[in-house]
Image (spheres, rainbow, N blue to C red):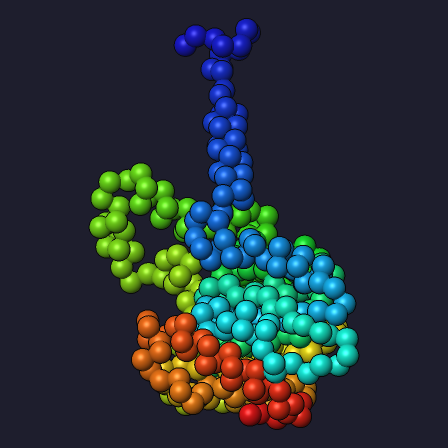
Length: 330
């Protein structure tokens, strides 16, 4: 055997080159994901734009009432922001002469994402809206399973990372959350995998459903919105994330209202949620059923269309204008 090192019979070791290539490849992919995450999904594009939303709220003049709509795709499709901001349902106190409505509504999200996201992008950034309207279906305000990596990458801020890790259900979830905060590539591994497959691997579109049959693969499966309609609400369920959200809103000085969203089938918000809202004196507007909103106004049988959104937004303004005592429902 040829000697690679004088005076020895050991071959030259090149493992460091392999490690270097792997590290460089990982850093390259990490940089691409961080810079072009918006091209992976419309959902990520919406989340990435949140700092701009927060900046608009922070820059609003004193005479403008800032309203933050918080929810998921149900509120994004169901609330007309222009109508909400221009509506006559807001009380005039001599200072707030007009209203500016903004949206924080990541797809497939529930109260855990909203809690940490509002802390990260608004509370910790000094962007404090005057009013927060929190929208929910039947169970979106109950603690739901989340993807820890995605939560760490896009919702939990650095100063809340330790508290968020402690709130996880297991040590494995806590580690995954921290790793997601460190690596966006890890948080989007399923999105990257499927995007590369669909773009560059012939036959991937037909083969992938077969390979993953019976498995929960990808962010849509991991963060699918819980059903908002049908059935009786469960009397069981944790509401710790909602409790934190209410505390955060009050620390920001925001007036918080919780509003249920119309669905094709009638429903009631889960009982533990209603008990917490009453306990904390948080106004709840029960708009799960709005006159004029019929099943044909849900084009995909889940989200309101344009006509339904107009009726729902009008109902929101009317309910807010009636000034229900805190903790009572309409």
